[in-house]
Length: 314
Length: 298
Image (cartoon, rainbow over all chains, first blue to last red):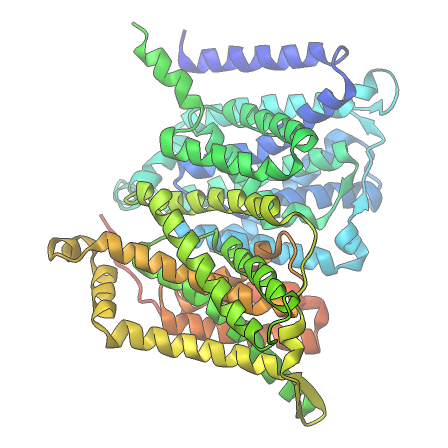
């Protein structure tokens, strides 16, 4: 079985299990999975950037752009369907990154990280001061239907959950496809040696730009899903600590597999739920220690544990 | 007219505070190539230590003027304890890794320190306002400023002069310059690079803690106070050019003046004016104001 075939089967099976499990899972578990998927989508975008050799400390910019766009579309423009709102959020974030990316694509390494952080802080500052969008409090968002099914009764109760699972499946499969294509394979080449990529006739800046927009669209979809699931958006989504959380998930998961960011995000949310209950003031401590352990001992992320074992097997 | 004076004076005070913190950040980056995301937490540690020590001093009924010595002592204490602990205990295992990886390592450290502060000091806020009011106020036209702000400005100037003299005027400073220029060759020539790293990181930590200790009397010391500081200090050093000391001074002045102008003239843009300036500077000078462009490596 080829690698891509295995990925398709694995992801399809995981999505099927998640869909079938919906009626038996308690409400908090459904919510946790939706939030994990939303964060996983943003971390998936970071995976693309990490493969290109870039670390962004500003994915919160697109996350918040997606969430606010979905919120504005629902409240001001009267868009009622959740799926459409997620699409709009993703598009708005992609448009944002297409504009910001014109500048960002010229930077690498630390300067890229710092500049992306600066842009997300600009949006944070704007949102905090804009009374039309609720300032520091943000505003409430609600979808009336998801895929045409009314929310709150019958199968519509699982609407946002189903939307999240479908989005995760689509994003993971699409991205797997993209990363395996010729264009996608240029990303690690740019990371390894940009100048050689250009000698071969490809444009490193275009590759970086495209991946930036992709990462922005994914983070925007995550933000819109979060807005629908929580029913609320606030400027905190653009703050740099939110972006830091995405970086945490991406580092924890590594760049080897498109499924890893979702598993990493679920692990993060589970860890957070337990920590909040038992030791609320050690939650970041555990996160930091886990991140250090991964960076020092598993430089390719948690996923590399499975890989190493598979390679070691005869 | 009085608005212009207010903008200048407020900007200068704010810039002094920023410079003390950013100087520590930029010297660590210049020598060790580590962009220390935990710098804000070390700043917060300095503030907490100052609040505890100066608070204990004042409650003990000692001479109020001694609380200034307590502020200095707490900065030194945090620097001498945390600097070597972090450098020897963690950072030395990561040398030679990519700069971006080091950012992630210090980000993890930031998360850990944030919670350690909460575990040690709890989540309630601390106040030591006595040193702030002790020196009285001074009238500048219609405005009155606490003399303590003047102390802050003097402290920043002293830090700047001391660093300038220390780096260019002493033997140790010249060794430091050699390490900045080329780590491997310096090491081959017999310079103890490890010790230089240790001293640099301790110095940077002390400066961060000094920034916190000097701020402690002017604000309430609360959890999360370092979170905002780190992005501000980043803006300062990125504007000036990473690793450049004059750059940090110019960056601090720029950010200080822009912020105070925004506060007085357009309060609604206060929060993001700084980052707009940072983005603008990077758009035209991709490596900051004081750093020359580097050749691309093949």
